Length: 216
View: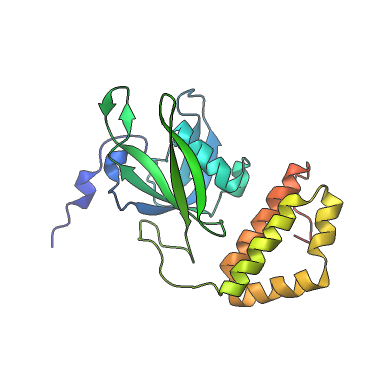
């Protein structure tokens, strides 16, 4: 077999929509940095990017912030499922563009409102990536999370987000029932425990705490 796939990648310093199919690929974030480009101010490096990072458009930046919060330091190691949407327009032209269909570190499907034109919005649903995936791979199929674990984590994350202070957050996490439940997650659903831990760290950061405490 002579695989011509490498010859299909355009010469560019960034990931382009034409590099993706409508099925897309899953990328694992390795680096997040701000740029001096007003049109493309955010560059997301990923495993195997060969120096061609993903520059999300403003609409996708809003989606990412809605999913993961605005602290880019927390994105490293997380995953996005990117695909080519052939219906994306630029001005009056239909040119295609990169969209997000899935993400890790969310506990369930997340609905987002996306601007698709002047005064026009479209509702999209971002699906959770379960159990990780290899760079460039398809959506993972293994590592099913027990429904009762998912239900507990969803409720606990709501409590985390409702905490009014760092002290209140610490009290929640130190409850004996919570400690036992998280220990069980580490054994039965480690990917879900990572999501819980990330939610605590993100909430802690919203109170101005730069470093995670030992109880996270």
